[in-house]
Length: 214
Image 1 (cartoon, rainbow, N blue to C red):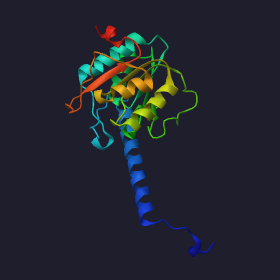
Image 2 (cartoon, rainbow, N blue to C red):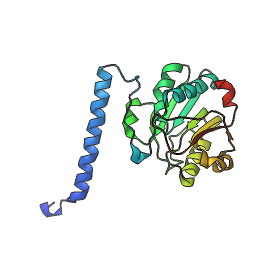
Image 3 (cartoon, helix red, strand yellow):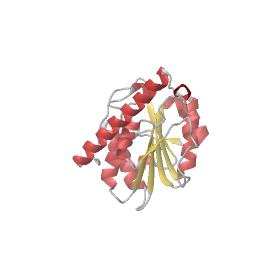
Image 4 (cartoon, helix red, strand yellow):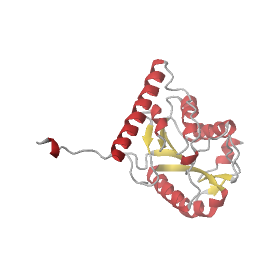
């Protein structure tokens, strides 16, 4: 093959590749450091990425939802956390090996929790790993955006994963859509965030979540 026939990358493509490899190298550095320090099971607090509409729960909300997981899932059961990454380590630490927990999340920073981390993009709601359909005793989801489209697509994923119980945390303004899509009832329990949000948040479930928290 002549040199003239060798395909060349555009400057834009080359820059994108450089960015991809730089991010991959950074993730590997984090993983290696955590593994060396034996901290892979610790709660790694990343800064909220507002471009991804990330707003972390406060400690009281985390502990309440961890209690729901502990009390509503049987030994050997499975839990899926969709777009609520700050719940993962506290829940994992609390239930230990009694319950299996999977984190479905778009933000690849949380890949440090592999193999329990599963990349998830709500724009591809049915793009799931084989064998996950209807395998989770409890699904907890917090759609990243307060939009009908995001809720509809996240709900599609929830229906594919859930075997029984569902908890969904989202803006109260989405109440009618939540009830229409998933037939969930609004709970007395209200999720709170570390940074107060302008939108009021509510929790919805298909079981008596409030009874667990009383």
